[in-house]
Length: 130
Image 1 (cartoon, helix red, strand yellow):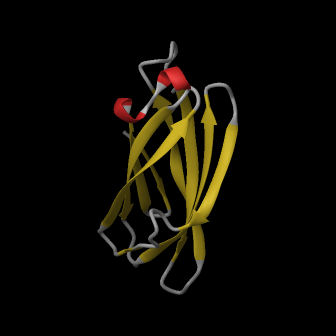
Image 2 (spheres, helix red, strand yellow; image 1 turned 90 degrees about the vertical axis):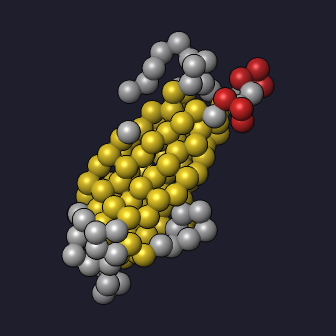
């Protein structure tokens, strides 16, 4: 598990290689990742936007940005958490992801929360990336 805390918000990530959804012979490798957003602060926050940087093991990087996550812009009350699962396909048997969420506080001010860098490792690669 990968974890990072920024401004009282802890982001935990657990990636899983999905053998059944991958097709190595066709250059398709798929991972699911579960994210838990824990609010350790004193006020409710809302996840407004996401930004990902996904790099495969050949060095090709793609940037992905958008509103919310999985079609939601969840509110997270103090002491509570929000969890979701999403996925990422790559054309190589390994890679890395890192990103950030733009959050809003109760007054509508935005701030950035770092998503820890995490490796996407499959049994089809020769070297584990960390």
